[in-house]
Image (tube, rainbow, N blue to C red; front, side):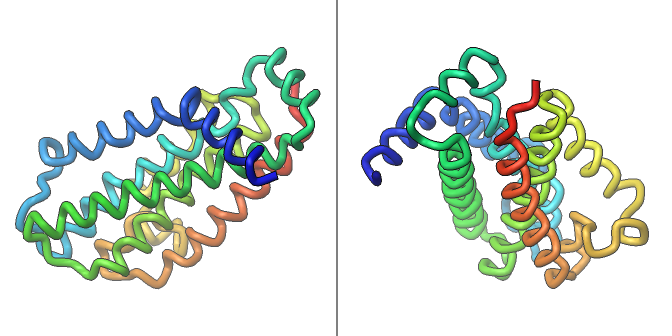
Length: 208
């Protein structure tokens, strides 16, 4: 069984996940040119992570159902021995592991660039944001079955955080970390994970 799971993971990494990993790494490499990454204080480091790095969740998690977009591929997967739910959980798990490694590596890079910040708290806060935005996209994708809409909804939510702020979004305000509040990230993390799970279970019915 473990051997089958490893085979599914290898195929997913090679044929699906790799382009999204490259895109995520590209965003990280662009950070010095867009936001600045050297000698940042606690406030500016949090702003970089909340406002910029959180977008990695959309890049890495939203495309989880993309290989199934083709109806013939969906039917082929259905005919296999492994449950589609198991395959989707493997894909999500793999994406979460890679996402966590990228975020962890980026924070280590910030430390080496003389940025001052609480490493553990900011790692937790950034991953929470990523999971919430990615989970929102996955949940929408499972219902709408349209990758463009799945990208658009979390991006619109992200933009709304600029306009509405904490006053309207409350516990689900994305940019709370650079406002000095790390406690509300638990709501983003829990709801984000719930949306990921719900999206996979809903997707089992394969709309269309």
